[in-house]
Image (tube, rainbow, N blue to C red; front, side):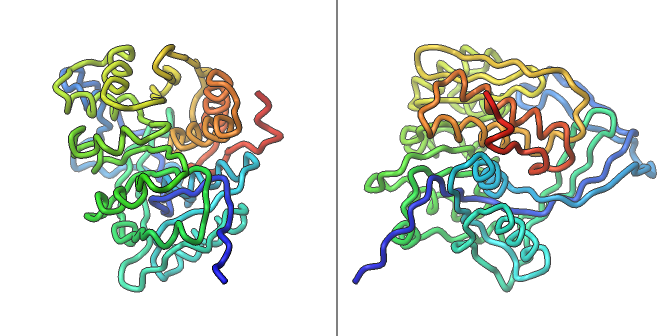
Length: 326
C-alpha cells in the first residue's frame, strides 16, 4: 500500500542559518548614484578599531524565515533546508519545531557546518551588511522523492547558494507538479542573468525582489532603469506573472499585469532591517494563498515587515494571525 502524502499549505526550500549581529555607531552610509546596482555602501574607517555597542544571536535564512512567518499566520508549513550536524544546526531545527513548522525533511550534513551570517549593523538606523558563511546550505539536495511524500499547495523558493542550484530548480519547477511557486531568487540566480532563469520565471506564480535585485535582473535584459513602472513592464513582458518589489523605507509595490499597487510604510527608527523582505513575503503570501485581494495582501506584507523592523532579528516581531488584523 502506498504511503499517503502529507498535505501542507506551503513548503519552503532554501537556506537556514544563525545570525550573529554586531551593532556600531561608527559606520557611514556612502551614496554612489553612478553605480546603478550598488547605490549605497556601508563604510568604516580603514585600520580603525570599531566599538561594538551591542550584539545578539538570532535565527535567519530565507527558507526558515518564511516558514516561521507563514506558520505564525495560521497556515501549515514545512521546511527543506540543510544544516550541519552541530550545535548551530540543532538550534535551527529546534526553533522551527518550537514554531510549529514541520521538520521531517531537514537534512543534516556531517562534513560541513551550519550556515551563519556575521552582520554589521548601524545602531542609529538598523541598516546592515551581512557576511555569509553558507556552509551546509551549499550542499542542499532536492530530489523528486520529496514531492512523493509531501503534497504542498505552494512552494516558496529562497536563495540557493550551491553549485547545483540549476539542478534543484529543474526539479522544483517540474511541469508535472501541481503546486504553485513563489520565488525570491538569490544573488547567484540574479547574477546569472535573465537568460539562465527565464524558463523558471515564466512558471513562477509570485516573484519577490527588492528594488536593487529587480534593477540587476532587468539590466541583464539590456535595459538600464530605476523606474518602478519600467521594471515591472520588463519583468512582466518577459514572463513574470505577479511581481512584488520592496523598496526599503519607500514602501512596497505589486503588479499583476494590469495595475501597480503601492503600500507606504510608516517612518520609524528601525532596530534591525534583517529579514524585512522575508517578513513581507510571509505576510503577502499568507493572505494571497487564501484568496485575499492584492491590495490587502500587500498591506499584510508591509505590516508584517514593519513589525519585524521594530525588533532585533529576522524572525522576532513576526506577527500571528490574531495580530495581523488587516
